[in-house]
Length: 164
Image 1 (cartoon, rainbow, N blue to C red):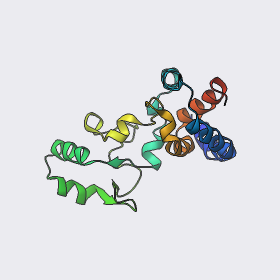
Image 2 (tube, rainbow, N blue to C red):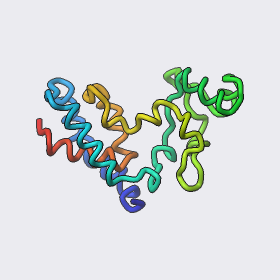
Image 3 (cartoon, rainbow, N blue to C red):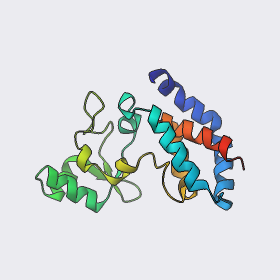
């Protein structure tokens, strides 16, 4: 996994134009069975991928924190929401709450999430490859291909299964 992680940025860069063209077509005319195929590809990939051997998402990017996330996590820590915000979050250029820094403060040395049961919605849904109306998140998927080996493999398999 570590070797693949080192190669991933270059692999993603090499495929970026091809993937962007593919997703542009996908958005314009999504196949009727897209969600079904994506669920199948996602499930198959995560039968063989153990996120605990990677955690690159937690090490290199941070999720958006919704108001509900902040409420839930601050309650978990027995803090007021504003205390949690002040201690761990900042507002980004899109006016969203994000982590002050990466790697994620809640990732332990063995790649376990210390707030797994109350983690943000974005973390629970990552890498979003099993999301309904998958074609609507193509820009997010292009970014995730760069950091998530599973997403890279899912997209490569998707292009074979659903040629456009």
